[in-house]
Amino acid sequence: GGSVGVLNFVDAYRQGQPPADDLDAIVTQASTESLSPTIWGIVYPDLWRFFLSNPVIWNPTHDRGWALEQAWANRLHHPDATLLDWGRDVEDGLRPLVLFNSSIVETGERMLLTPAQAESNQQSARWPTRYFLDMYAGRDLPVTTAARLSATFPYVSPIARPAFDGQPIEPNGVRLADGGYFDNHGTVTAIEWLQQILPLAKADKRNKILVLEIRLYDFLPRTPPENGFQPNWTNTFIGPLSTLLGTWGTTQVQRATVEWSLLQEAHPDVQIQKVAFFPRPKPRCTVEDDPTCGEELLDPATVPLSWQLSPGQIEFLQESWKERSTAERQKVAACLQRGACGPMQSIFQAE
Image 1 (spheres, rainbow, N blue to C red):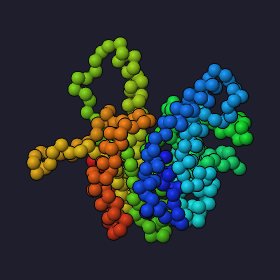
Image 2 (cartoon, helix red, strand yellow):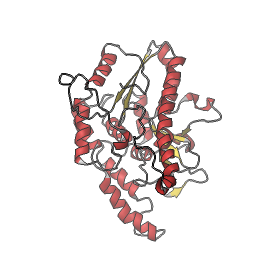
Image 3 (cartoon, rainbow, N blue to C red):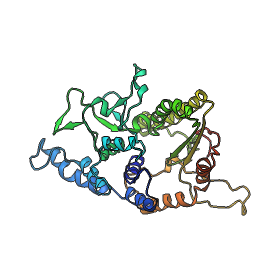
Image 4 (cartoon, one colour):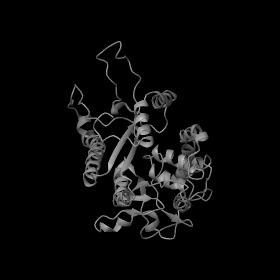
């Protein structure tokens, strides 16, 4: 979701500004379903490739990932844009810098798909950040491919490795998967780049940072189910996998909390305002009618995670964004227009 949204939004930039008259169109094209081209890729080229190792009737680079990229490219103003193209626009002040995250299958490391590179990258010799354009010097990558690699939904879109002129890169042709395996919230990358630019920003007397998060639910500790664990063979079998999946998300959230706090402690003269947008259910009551009425939050266990959302789910997200995010919009406006940025809150506090 985030990668596709960024792809459509940044593509629409004109002379350094997002087109105010096209914002609704950007939202529409970013939320257009992409399941049809994916199914075509699975049923035709991928299925043939399953039975025949190299079917001559299909281009070897054509698969469900390629079909997905073609569908996205057809909606863009600049369908052939590459990372280096966007990099030149960044240098000219025409587009914001975009950092797509992906995960290296072989090592579990983070790979950044971006036209820029932090100068402090090599200061950590033990764990330097991997950059695609650095690892494959002299090459380039379509922005649609970068977005697709960053959003490699398990099994729906394929894990991929770079191939130029139809030939895989050897011996360092690593495979790339969804960036969420390493950092689903982009916190590591954001803080790494903030550490790089903060000295320059403070020298220019810029000491306020506004961090916007768009997420699916609020990060609050979950209450264990009342019925507890039911001992049976099914739970015994899936218990380790359930624990792995549960801790995968929780550890990233808690790690993000610590990292933002450490950044603030390292730069006490910088004011960091973090505003989180997330959908909220429609209130079932009002304070006027019931003094005990409180804000309802989505249960993460019930959040829809399917590739294809139902019309009702889409309507709920749109309604929540337009009608139940007033407080967040006011925080952003106050910070941007009047410089009234509030203190950074814990990621576990309702915002």
